[in-house]
Image (cartoon, rainbow, N blue to C red; front, top):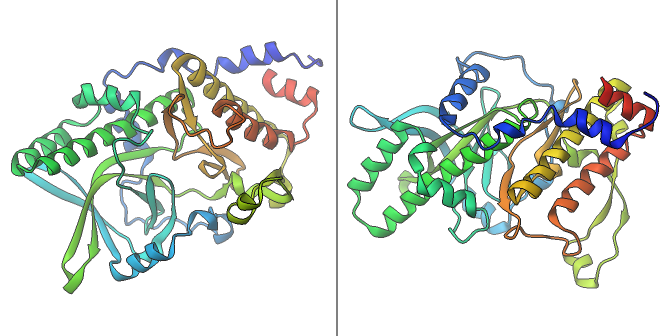
Length: 367
Protein backbone atom coordinates (compact mmCIF):
# COMPACT_ATOMS: atom_id res chain seq x y z
CA UNK A 1 0.00 0.00 0.00
CA UNK A 2 1.64 3.22 -1.13
CA UNK A 3 -1.14 5.74 -0.73
CA UNK A 4 -1.70 7.16 2.75
CA UNK A 5 -5.29 6.30 3.69
CA UNK A 6 -6.32 7.86 6.97
CA UNK A 7 -9.46 5.80 7.57
CA UNK A 8 -7.58 2.60 6.76
CA UNK A 9 -4.74 3.13 9.24
CA UNK A 10 -7.16 4.35 11.86
CA UNK A 11 -9.05 1.05 11.69
CA UNK A 12 -5.78 -0.88 12.07
CA UNK A 13 -4.79 1.31 14.98
CA UNK A 14 -8.05 0.97 16.90
CA UNK A 15 -7.71 -2.79 17.18
CA UNK A 16 -4.76 -2.23 19.53
CA UNK A 17 -6.90 -0.28 22.01
CA UNK A 18 -9.19 -2.35 24.23
CA UNK A 19 -12.17 0.01 24.39
CA UNK A 20 -14.50 -2.85 25.29
CA UNK A 21 -12.58 -3.44 28.54
CA UNK A 22 -12.52 0.21 29.59
CA UNK A 23 -15.49 0.12 31.95
CA UNK A 24 -14.93 -3.41 33.23
CA UNK A 25 -13.63 -2.75 36.75
CA UNK A 26 -14.93 -5.90 38.45
CA UNK A 27 -12.22 -7.22 40.81
CA UNK A 28 -9.75 -4.92 39.08
CA UNK A 29 -7.67 -4.64 42.28
CA UNK A 30 -6.84 -8.37 42.08
CA UNK A 31 -5.68 -7.91 38.50
CA UNK A 32 -3.63 -4.87 39.46
CA UNK A 33 -1.90 -6.58 42.37
CA UNK A 34 -1.05 -9.70 40.36
CA UNK A 35 0.42 -7.59 37.58
CA UNK A 36 2.38 -5.38 39.95
CA UNK A 37 3.81 -8.43 41.76
CA UNK A 38 5.33 -9.57 38.47
CA UNK A 39 6.70 -6.19 37.42
CA UNK A 40 8.27 -4.91 40.64
CA UNK A 41 11.52 -5.94 42.28
CA UNK A 42 11.06 -8.67 44.89
CA UNK A 43 14.34 -8.14 46.76
CA UNK A 44 14.70 -4.40 47.26
CA UNK A 45 18.33 -4.81 48.34
CA UNK A 46 19.34 -6.64 45.19
CA UNK A 47 21.88 -4.44 43.43
CA UNK A 48 20.75 -3.67 39.92
CA UNK A 49 23.23 -2.30 37.38
CA UNK A 50 23.33 1.48 37.82
CA UNK A 51 21.58 3.57 35.20
CA UNK A 52 24.05 5.83 33.33
CA UNK A 53 23.58 9.37 34.56
CA UNK A 54 23.10 10.66 31.03
CA UNK A 55 20.07 8.37 30.64
CA UNK A 56 18.28 9.46 33.81
CA UNK A 57 15.23 11.69 33.37
CA UNK A 58 16.34 15.22 34.17
CA UNK A 59 13.84 18.04 33.92
CA UNK A 60 15.08 20.79 36.20
CA UNK A 61 11.85 22.73 35.84
CA UNK A 62 10.06 19.99 37.76
CA UNK A 63 12.46 20.32 40.68
CA UNK A 64 12.03 24.01 41.37
CA UNK A 65 10.19 25.04 44.52
CA UNK A 66 9.42 28.40 46.04
CA UNK A 67 11.77 30.04 48.55
CA UNK A 68 9.24 29.41 51.33
CA UNK A 69 9.03 25.73 50.42
CA UNK A 70 12.82 25.36 50.35
CA UNK A 71 13.13 26.97 53.81
CA UNK A 72 10.44 24.64 55.18
CA UNK A 73 12.18 21.57 53.73
CA UNK A 74 15.46 22.58 55.37
CA UNK A 75 13.90 23.18 58.77
CA UNK A 76 11.73 20.04 58.71
CA UNK A 77 13.54 17.59 56.40
CA UNK A 78 11.89 14.37 55.24
CA UNK A 79 13.45 11.16 56.57
CA UNK A 80 11.44 8.12 55.47
CA UNK A 81 8.11 6.63 54.44
CA UNK A 82 6.39 3.47 55.60
CA UNK A 83 3.61 1.62 53.86
CA UNK A 84 0.81 1.24 56.39
CA UNK A 85 -1.93 -1.38 56.38
CA UNK A 86 -4.02 -3.38 58.87
CA UNK A 87 -2.49 -6.51 60.37
CA UNK A 88 -2.39 -8.25 63.75
CA UNK A 89 -5.45 -6.29 64.89
CA UNK A 90 -3.92 -2.89 64.37
CA UNK A 91 -1.93 -0.60 62.10
CA UNK A 92 1.09 -2.32 60.61
CA UNK A 93 4.10 -0.51 59.15
CA UNK A 94 6.29 -2.20 56.59
CA UNK A 95 8.48 -1.47 53.55
CA UNK A 96 10.74 1.15 55.07
CA UNK A 97 11.62 3.67 52.33
CA UNK A 98 14.43 6.09 53.25
CA UNK A 99 14.25 9.50 51.57
CA UNK A 100 15.92 12.88 52.05
CA UNK A 101 15.85 16.29 50.46
CA UNK A 102 18.75 15.13 48.26
CA UNK A 103 16.49 12.36 46.93
CA UNK A 104 13.85 14.88 45.81
CA UNK A 105 13.67 14.72 42.01
CA UNK A 106 10.48 16.55 41.10
CA UNK A 107 6.92 17.51 41.83
CA UNK A 108 3.68 17.64 39.98
CA UNK A 109 0.41 19.33 40.76
CA UNK A 110 -0.62 16.47 43.05
CA UNK A 111 2.55 14.67 44.18
CA UNK A 112 6.12 15.04 45.44
CA UNK A 113 8.62 12.62 43.87
CA UNK A 114 11.68 11.07 45.54
CA UNK A 115 14.26 8.61 44.31
CA UNK A 116 14.65 5.39 46.33
CA UNK A 117 17.98 3.53 46.71
CA UNK A 118 16.73 0.48 44.78
CA UNK A 119 16.01 2.00 41.36
CA UNK A 120 12.47 3.04 42.18
CA UNK A 121 10.74 6.36 42.65
CA UNK A 122 8.32 7.15 45.48
CA UNK A 123 5.48 9.63 44.97
CA UNK A 124 3.84 11.17 48.01
CA UNK A 125 0.46 12.82 47.48
CA UNK A 126 -0.05 16.49 48.26
CA UNK A 127 -2.92 17.62 50.44
CA UNK A 128 -5.80 18.90 48.32
CA UNK A 129 -9.25 20.30 48.93
CA UNK A 130 -12.30 18.28 47.81
CA UNK A 131 -13.19 21.28 45.61
CA UNK A 132 -10.20 20.56 43.34
CA UNK A 133 -11.40 19.64 39.80
CA UNK A 134 -9.58 16.31 40.13
CA UNK A 135 -12.37 15.12 42.41
CA UNK A 136 -15.18 15.08 39.87
CA UNK A 137 -17.47 12.30 38.64
CA UNK A 138 -14.94 9.47 39.05
CA UNK A 139 -14.31 10.52 42.64
CA UNK A 140 -18.06 10.37 43.27
CA UNK A 141 -18.10 6.92 41.71
CA UNK A 142 -15.39 5.72 44.06
CA UNK A 143 -17.08 7.36 47.05
CA UNK A 144 -20.30 5.40 46.49
CA UNK A 145 -18.51 2.04 46.69
CA UNK A 146 -15.12 2.56 48.31
CA UNK A 147 -14.64 -1.15 49.11
CA UNK A 148 -14.44 -1.96 45.40
CA UNK A 149 -11.46 0.34 44.94
CA UNK A 150 -9.28 -0.42 47.95
CA UNK A 151 -7.96 -3.71 49.30
CA UNK A 152 -9.68 -5.47 52.25
CA UNK A 153 -6.78 -4.78 54.64
CA UNK A 154 -6.89 -1.10 53.60
CA UNK A 155 -10.59 -0.91 54.40
CA UNK A 156 -9.87 -2.53 57.76
CA UNK A 157 -7.23 0.13 58.38
CA UNK A 158 -9.77 2.80 57.50
CA UNK A 159 -12.29 1.37 60.00
CA UNK A 160 -9.58 1.07 62.67
CA UNK A 161 -8.54 4.73 62.34
CA UNK A 162 -12.14 5.91 62.03
CA UNK A 163 -13.19 4.25 65.29
CA UNK A 164 -10.00 5.25 67.07
CA UNK A 165 -10.43 9.00 66.56
CA UNK A 166 -13.82 10.67 67.19
CA UNK A 167 -12.90 14.09 65.76
CA UNK A 168 -15.21 14.98 62.85
CA UNK A 169 -12.46 16.90 61.02
CA UNK A 170 -10.08 13.93 61.38
CA UNK A 171 -12.72 11.54 60.09
CA UNK A 172 -13.54 13.76 57.11
CA UNK A 173 -9.87 13.92 56.13
CA UNK A 174 -9.50 10.16 56.65
CA UNK A 175 -12.46 9.38 54.40
CA UNK A 176 -11.14 11.79 51.78
CA UNK A 177 -7.66 10.19 51.74
CA UNK A 178 -8.98 6.65 51.28
CA UNK A 179 -11.32 7.79 48.52
CA UNK A 180 -8.39 9.49 46.83
CA UNK A 181 -6.39 6.26 47.00
CA UNK A 182 -9.25 4.49 45.24
CA UNK A 183 -9.46 7.31 42.69
CA UNK A 184 -5.73 7.04 41.87
CA UNK A 185 -6.13 3.32 41.27
CA UNK A 186 -9.20 3.84 39.09
CA UNK A 187 -7.41 6.40 36.89
CA UNK A 188 -4.46 4.07 36.49
CA UNK A 189 -6.64 1.06 35.71
CA UNK A 190 -8.60 2.84 33.00
CA UNK A 191 -5.54 4.10 31.10
CA UNK A 192 -3.65 0.85 31.66
CA UNK A 193 -6.63 -0.93 30.08
CA UNK A 194 -6.52 1.27 26.97
CA UNK A 195 -2.72 1.40 26.59
CA UNK A 196 -1.35 -1.56 28.60
CA UNK A 197 2.20 -1.63 27.23
CA UNK A 198 2.71 2.14 27.29
CA UNK A 199 1.72 2.84 30.90
CA UNK A 200 4.56 2.53 33.40
CA UNK A 201 3.62 -0.08 36.08
CA UNK A 202 2.52 1.74 39.24
CA UNK A 203 1.78 0.41 42.72
CA UNK A 204 -0.59 2.46 44.91
CA UNK A 205 -0.71 2.24 48.70
CA UNK A 206 -1.43 4.23 51.85
CA UNK A 207 1.73 5.65 53.35
CA UNK A 208 3.06 7.47 56.38
CA UNK A 209 5.70 10.09 55.60
CA UNK A 210 7.96 11.20 58.44
CA UNK A 211 9.71 14.55 58.88
CA UNK A 212 12.23 15.54 61.52
CA UNK A 213 10.41 18.07 63.68
CA UNK A 214 11.37 20.31 66.58
CA UNK A 215 13.63 18.53 69.11
CA UNK A 216 13.67 15.62 66.61
CA UNK A 217 10.03 14.86 67.38
CA UNK A 218 8.65 13.21 64.22
CA UNK A 219 6.01 14.93 62.11
CA UNK A 220 3.78 12.32 60.46
CA UNK A 221 1.89 12.82 57.22
CA UNK A 222 -0.76 10.25 56.21
CA UNK A 223 -1.44 10.27 52.47
CA UNK A 224 -1.87 7.98 49.43
CA UNK A 225 1.46 7.17 47.81
CA UNK A 226 2.62 5.23 44.79
CA UNK A 227 5.89 4.03 43.37
CA UNK A 228 7.32 3.03 40.02
CA UNK A 229 10.51 1.48 38.72
CA UNK A 230 13.03 4.14 37.77
CA UNK A 231 13.62 3.85 34.04
CA UNK A 232 16.32 5.45 31.90
CA UNK A 233 15.01 8.07 29.53
CA UNK A 234 14.14 11.69 28.86
CA UNK A 235 10.93 13.61 29.39
CA UNK A 236 9.32 14.65 26.13
CA UNK A 237 9.87 18.26 27.21
CA UNK A 238 13.63 17.63 27.07
CA UNK A 239 13.40 17.00 23.34
CA UNK A 240 12.15 20.56 22.89
CA UNK A 241 14.28 23.40 21.57
CA UNK A 242 12.99 26.85 22.47
CA UNK A 243 13.58 29.05 19.43
CA UNK A 244 10.57 31.22 18.75
CA UNK A 245 8.86 33.19 21.52
CA UNK A 246 5.07 33.44 21.35
CA UNK A 247 3.36 36.83 21.35
CA UNK A 248 1.73 37.62 24.70
CA UNK A 249 0.91 40.74 26.62
CA UNK A 250 3.63 42.50 28.61
CA UNK A 251 2.61 41.00 31.96
CA UNK A 252 2.55 37.41 30.59
CA UNK A 253 5.96 37.88 28.96
CA UNK A 254 7.34 39.13 32.24
CA UNK A 255 5.86 36.45 34.52
CA UNK A 256 5.47 33.38 32.30
CA UNK A 257 7.05 33.58 28.85
CA UNK A 258 5.86 30.97 26.34
CA UNK A 259 7.70 29.50 23.40
CA UNK A 260 6.77 27.70 20.22
CA UNK A 261 7.56 24.01 20.62
CA UNK A 262 10.31 22.83 18.30
CA UNK A 263 10.90 19.14 18.94
CA UNK A 264 14.28 17.75 17.96
CA UNK A 265 14.71 13.99 18.41
CA UNK A 266 18.19 14.22 16.83
CA UNK A 267 19.34 16.01 19.97
CA UNK A 268 19.97 12.58 21.51
CA UNK A 269 21.99 10.97 18.75
CA UNK A 270 21.22 8.78 15.77
CA UNK A 271 17.97 6.84 15.93
CA UNK A 272 16.82 4.24 13.40
CA UNK A 273 13.79 5.06 11.27
CA UNK A 274 12.13 1.89 12.53
CA UNK A 275 12.24 3.13 16.13
CA UNK A 276 10.98 6.55 15.09
CA UNK A 277 8.05 4.96 13.24
CA UNK A 278 7.21 2.84 16.29
CA UNK A 279 7.08 5.94 18.49
CA UNK A 280 4.87 7.67 15.91
CA UNK A 281 2.53 4.68 15.90
CA UNK A 282 2.31 4.62 19.70
CA UNK A 283 1.69 8.36 19.81
CA UNK A 284 -1.26 7.82 17.48
CA UNK A 285 -2.54 5.20 19.91
CA UNK A 286 -2.34 7.77 22.71
CA UNK A 287 -4.27 10.26 20.57
CA UNK A 288 -7.01 7.74 19.78
CA UNK A 289 -7.35 6.84 23.47
CA UNK A 290 -7.53 10.56 24.28
CA UNK A 291 -10.27 11.06 21.67
CA UNK A 292 -12.24 8.09 22.99
CA UNK A 293 -12.09 9.39 26.55
CA UNK A 294 -13.26 12.83 25.49
CA UNK A 295 -15.99 11.82 23.03
CA UNK A 296 -17.38 8.71 24.72
CA UNK A 297 -16.64 9.22 28.42
CA UNK A 298 -16.55 13.05 28.68
CA UNK A 299 -13.14 12.75 30.32
CA UNK A 300 -9.91 14.58 29.59
CA UNK A 301 -6.63 12.66 29.86
CA UNK A 302 -4.31 15.10 31.62
CA UNK A 303 -1.12 14.19 29.78
CA UNK A 304 1.60 16.76 29.15
CA UNK A 305 5.16 16.65 27.86
CA UNK A 306 6.53 16.15 31.38
CA UNK A 307 4.34 13.02 31.82
CA UNK A 308 5.84 11.24 28.79
CA UNK A 309 9.24 9.54 28.75
CA UNK A 310 11.25 8.36 25.77
CA UNK A 311 13.28 5.43 27.11
CA UNK A 312 16.97 5.32 26.30
CA UNK A 313 18.74 3.61 24.67
CA UNK A 314 15.70 1.60 23.48
CA UNK A 315 13.98 4.81 22.35
CA UNK A 316 10.52 3.61 23.36
CA UNK A 317 7.51 5.55 24.59
CA UNK A 318 6.19 5.34 28.18
CA UNK A 319 3.56 7.47 29.94
CA UNK A 320 3.06 8.02 33.68
CA UNK A 321 1.66 10.42 36.29
CA UNK A 322 -1.59 11.15 34.47
CA UNK A 323 -5.05 11.97 35.78
CA UNK A 324 -8.54 12.01 34.34
CA UNK A 325 -10.74 15.09 34.64
CA UNK A 326 -14.33 15.77 33.68
CA UNK A 327 -14.15 17.83 30.51
CA UNK A 328 -16.31 20.60 31.98
CA UNK A 329 -14.03 20.92 35.04
CA UNK A 330 -10.67 20.80 33.31
CA UNK A 331 -8.58 23.97 33.32
CA UNK A 332 -8.33 24.97 29.68
CA UNK A 333 -5.08 26.86 30.10
CA UNK A 334 -5.15 28.24 26.56
CA UNK A 335 -8.71 29.52 26.44
CA UNK A 336 -8.82 29.50 22.64
CA UNK A 337 -8.54 25.71 22.38
CA UNK A 338 -10.54 22.82 23.75
CA UNK A 339 -8.40 20.62 26.04
CA UNK A 340 -8.66 17.66 23.66
CA UNK A 341 -7.30 19.74 20.77
CA UNK A 342 -4.58 21.27 22.94
CA UNK A 343 -3.25 17.87 24.03
CA UNK A 344 -3.39 16.33 20.56
CA UNK A 345 -1.73 19.33 18.94
CA UNK A 346 1.32 18.95 21.18
CA UNK A 347 1.67 15.27 20.26
CA UNK A 348 1.17 16.03 16.57
CA UNK A 349 3.97 18.60 16.67
CA UNK A 350 6.32 15.97 18.00
CA UNK A 351 5.28 13.42 15.34
CA UNK A 352 5.71 16.05 12.60
CA UNK A 353 9.30 16.62 13.71
CA UNK A 354 10.07 13.00 12.74
CA UNK A 355 9.64 14.05 9.09
CA UNK A 356 8.06 10.76 8.12
CA UNK A 357 6.66 10.54 4.61
CA UNK A 358 3.08 9.47 3.94
CA UNK A 359 4.45 6.20 2.64
CA UNK A 360 6.41 5.56 5.85
CA UNK A 361 3.37 6.36 7.99
CA UNK A 362 1.25 4.01 5.92
CA UNK A 363 3.84 1.23 6.22
CA UNK A 364 3.94 1.77 9.99
CA UNK A 365 0.23 1.04 10.37
CA UNK A 366 0.41 -1.83 7.91
CA UNK A 367 3.05 -3.57 10.01
